[in-house]
Image (cartoon, rainbow, N blue to C red; front, side, top):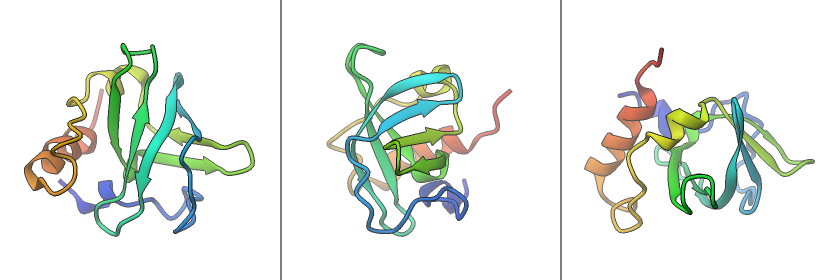
Length: 116
């Protein structure tokens, strides 16, 4: 697994320190929810996305490396994954996501694996 999955890409348009809480989140094939919380910690940056009714009110953890583009003007984050890829990801665990390296390896490994 590459560490780059846990960092915003240089072309994403994310600005360090920007608050993107509440931004809409769009997968490559449609709307998936809104940013519930996020971190821009170096090597451990992520988004927690509230999916609302889309997948039964679950939240998902997306490594920052999945972010393709941040549109601050329209308050939208575009991620380079499909809705199904996000739906099939390891379930978000609010108790493990902070400080559990194994959980981050599991989630990061899922998103860092080539699809198709």
